Image 1 (cartoon, rainbow, N blue to C red):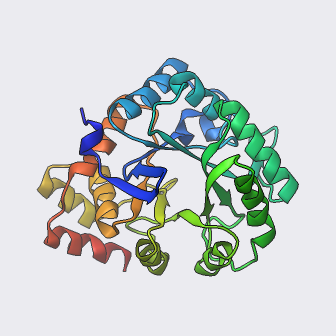
Image 2 (cartoon, rainbow, N blue to C red):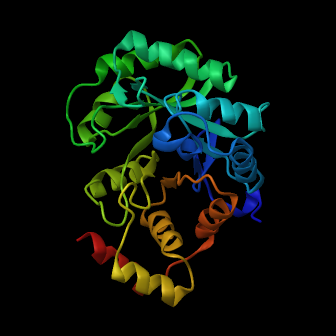
Length: 288
């Protein structure tokens, strides 16, 4: 099993250093990220195994469940180990059927922060990402009012750092005029490269770029080139896809999710893979 020293760390601020291989807790909820987990004991075991393996970056949100995942994190890990950083998101709610409802009213964003604090058992949230209504990240709509509301809570000490999710380059620029941004969480993987320029910008500015759906999401990555590279290197296709992301940018961080301890360990092992140049070139061609 990995130890904390074996996982590469990204230093974003004096009080914020996260392992580039993180853990996305979304899949711990029930089907459709709604309701309780199928196996609560296993869900608790996965969270504890992630921390035991040296992961210091857990991604979550109170709209996973809703509240279910945050309460699982609290049950499994509270009081939280020194150095563990929980990154959460606000900007959506769920209805009684589990549908995802954008909720970006500034007053409700503040309520969502308070709910995250309560369900995680924290007095201050390490990082809060503002999730926009555009998961593809192509919008240029102003986020000043919404991000400003979170900046107010940061000034009050309820949030240490702020980030963005599902945003464009222009929206990042606008947000930075209001408060520092330490994370951008957008769709990016081997087959989805629309954010190439933003990935490079984040690296230049030491902003963590958290690629969500690193394995393709609801449509898993499928490519003969990926399969060939995986077979040649003796790794799984999922491990190769994760390793490619980590080599893509020095500020890339990953938050793959799973409800299986064995799968968690397989994902973490990808952080120790080094892809040779010819493999990277082959994989680079997938998204072109």
